[in-house]
Each structure stands twice: as C-alpha cells, then as structure tokens.
Image (cartoon, rainbow, N blue to C red; front, side, top):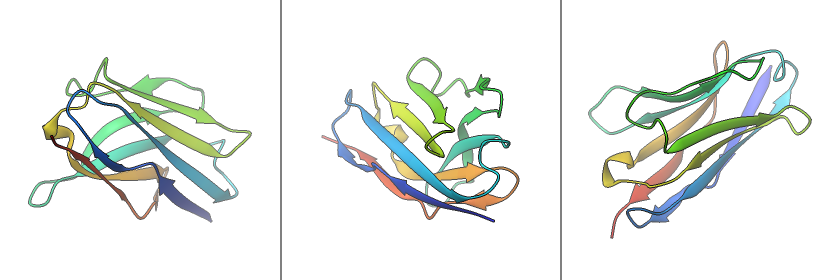
Length: 112
C-alpha cells in the first residue's frame, strides 16, 4: 500500500515557476514508475510527466522543455518542476505511483 501527499500548488503569474512535491509512504515507491497528471474541469485527465523506476522520463509536447520530473528514492518523493507557466497549465495536478496509487490533487492556477 502506498499513500501519496502532494504539495506546492498555488497561484503564479504567466511565465513563472512552481515546484510540486509528492511524498509517498508505504512500500513499493522506488520499484515503480511515478508520474504527474492534470485535469481541467470538463476535460479528460492528461499525462504531464512520467519517470520510470530506472529514471527515464517522458513528457507530452505541451510541456516538453518547460517541465521536469525527478525522483528521490531515498526520500520517497517525486517532484515536478514547472517553468514558463502558461494560463493553459491551470489545472488540478495529481501524483501517481504505478500501478494505481493517486494523490489527492493540488491546484495550480496561472493567471495575472
């Protein structure tokens, strides 16, 4: 069983940066892939970034070169560094540890 607690969301101006953190408790974090997803009301949840247990990363084109996912297995934590934020990045961001563990979500709002 893995429990996830996200932090770091908030309000930021366009062009700004935020770092999200997801702390995992329980067993199995380091041996599983982890990722960040986001959801806008009325739309489907979409993948934002994925990091495998071996450290390989995957990003969709919409965030590539702006977002960076990383993990610290010693701290059981996965991070999402977001830069050059745009209003269209506004969403609730969810942490995921494979196969099916989810955090409660943290709101990110990009607005002037």
